[in-house]
Length: 160
Ligand code: ADP
Image 1: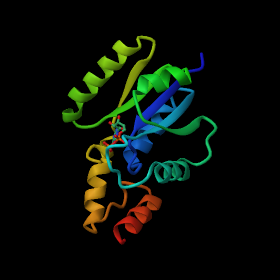
Image 2 (image 1 turned 60 degrees about the vertical axis):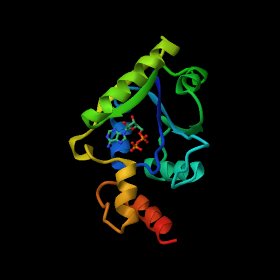
Image 3 (image 1 turned 45 degrees about the vertical axis):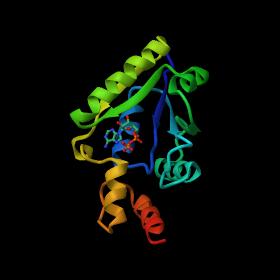
């Protein structure tokens, strides 16, 4: 059976941790929609369009992957897209409680959609968009944690 997953996140910007989850996710699901979730009341470093463009560039042409944006409840998006699965990645233990709550509320909102977690690759245990931005904003090297293209985009932002 064809399985479709949505992978929601802020992706501000996409990191090697996200890419790892996307690649490994595609080994068990057939089609993936990467959903750039945004909150109009929160400021991000990159605009939604910039984030989508960066994801498109680093993922390349893959007929199994679509990229979209959404603001609201991810179960609503998943239901409309006819998705079977919400894909999430898990890093440190500190994330577990929040992700657990989120998975339970999403299941309560729609019992037909399962949340699926993949453990982070050990290399990306401490990689988050937040920490990448923090390091890059002070001129620290984030090489190896994000694709080179993203390093360039971060440098452009912070040199302004
Ligand atoms: P971040 O916390 O880096 O801003 P997002 O909000 O964009 O990330 O996260 C989207 C999803 O990707 C979440 O499920 C998050 O746990 C997962 N994720 C983010 N970074 C990693 C990583 N380094 N390893 C595994 N999963 C990750």
